[in-house]
Length: 382
View 1 (cartoon, rainbow, N blue to C red):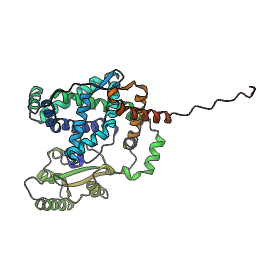
View 2: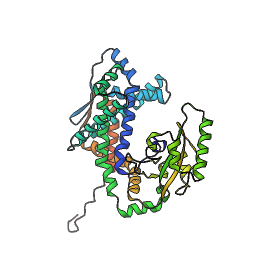
View 3: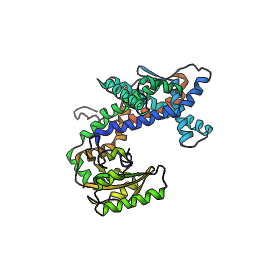
View 4: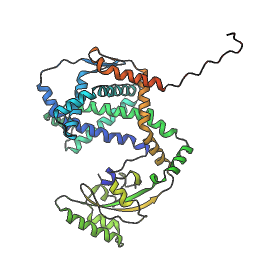
């Protein structure tokens, strides 16, 4: 993937679900590559009987699911945040009420998704498509080959599919029930007022790139070559011709360097959504101008601004506002689901979960509009 494409948050609402895919793939990678050793250890350990943790409507969150969440969190704490095993265990114990609370939210979203006509079928199709994609990218021709390869690592493909299924369902429900209502509910006046107050956020560009990889070469060598190509492009040499002869990113090279969709249709990028170094390199460039070489983790890129447009674009403005409001809107929606749900912790977990549920119930009650005061009947005797 191009460093520009990987460094931008797409704000058009139609791409919200694909942003969710990126999140889900990261979660799946964690399940596949990080949790495998832990699961192998669990399988070798003495069997522990499963038990209910909390009932959520007609579903029950079981201890086995909580253990899996704890284990995945432990992997994050030790391998990504550098905690010792003892520190990680202490953090997990501290966060246990929140972890269970998140599982309650997940259960409610999944239940809502299952009750939504056709959504389960759509999610299942996405799960199958993603699993097939993983198999193909791994050089495996069939799901059975993928299943066997994962089995060799001590991983059950069905567990991974279930993780994907639940994540996809949660994101799909939030998109349909919350994000879409925010996105399409914005009035023309709101859009214009926001745009006028935040014009700097909406400078947008189409870009082409020449990319040079660091693989097998020194940084100094690649940087020097990038500077030569940038000078040639600025001197009038056809950028597409330079791409054809020099660029090492096949994904954009097929479109003559254009950062585009699969059909080579140019994509528009908000400058404010590009990675810092990329945004700094292009934000002051006019259409037709070429940037200086930009260092990335994989190599150096040279960008050409093909088109620049600072005008009002409704979809961009809708997307940015939706993104800003989504977290609060998600919280309010989940609060409504919890209010309407039957949630009962098992006796062994009541001490852990109930205080957070009581706090949530109190906050929900405080957000309810106060009842209008009863009007006094002037004719009524006191």
